[in-house]
Length: 66
Image 1 (spheres, rainbow, N blue to C red):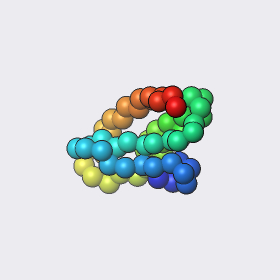
Image 2 (cartoon, rainbow, N blue to C red):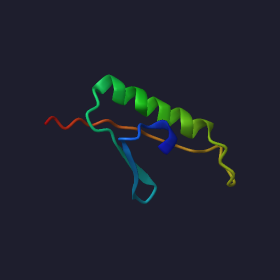
Image 3 (tube, rainbow, N blue to C red):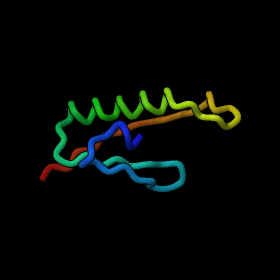
Image 4 (cartoon, helix red, strand yellow):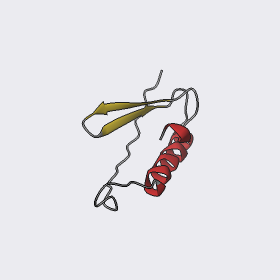
């Protein structure tokens, strides 16, 4: 996931199986494209644990105007 975002962005473990990605100074369309890159990266990652074909992922976007 870290390889799919910009250097200025931050990816971090949030809690349990959740992660958060902070995209400072990013317009909505660019955030949607970043989310699509993360989704594609996870979908194409060669997971090796049993039943690794059953990976679920959801992505949400939130804007905080300054």
